[in-house]
Length: 429
Image (cartoon, rainbow, N blue to C red):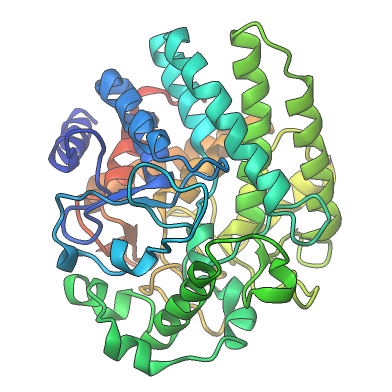
């Protein structure tokens, strides 16, 4: 796999922008939050100083209320190179604004895990100490401002916050938001010019994305009374799993710094308990997104419903059910290719459209960690081999066709290259 490693390093070097890594030059020319976390994990193996700088740049844009924005805009990138750019997100009356131009959305909090992984490679306690209070502030924002359902779980205000933008898990909630074609006449998409339109969210989806984002922006990104005032309020199982995992990781970071960490473990346990109570479906054997506005769980079987496997402390029966679902024909774990983003047997499964069927490397990387954590080393080894084989054969693409393994979306995609480096350098199993 030496050639794969060399190609992965080339992708990360290509996408380095001086103080952060872009996900892909053609399609994503700014800094994305959870992309940077995954990218730093890979960089730690080959460019450790750059890994720290990646995360430092992101957290320099942290808001005063603790939120870490989902995009940090590079002022050197021409406005026409990405939409919706900084002009769309600008809300002058918004408090807590950071020193750099950002969105007001967040993304899954993978950052404590990334910081800890980079620390494991470098042993730099000074940098670890710099990040610790900022990571705590990120978690405190989510706990204090985003528990819209008052059930101990974090709510997202936009599909983009989940990272799984057009997942079928959002379909019912999205249908309540009127599609407004006028938005796409006023604001022209660029993503479906750079990438194949069949691989991207539809115009109808995109107009709803803009409407939801605009509603949150026009309120100054105020999280007060989301249930009464916002059109999209969901509890995402993968977001909450990563939120709980961040607390478990912060307990480890606190121990490294000689600080108390019991409160982190207590919060992690509470989130796991709430997830099992509110998001797990015994009938399907997996977790489902919950619409806080209606109180209903989505019936869609999506990969974010398997990601809670990363959590320590899951009841044994839940772990068993998740693995049974993952290895079933619905998701194909253990088969010739990695796990899909959506149930292969569903009538609306789409092998090429973004999060409605294709294979994503970050999801499989997380699932492998979960398998190892729950003692399924042999299955984790199979998933590692299938994931590396897919990248080796197809290149570092954004996502992949689950029928053929062909690369889809943006080529030379950073987190794919970075996580390949991690799988190559630290197999764990």
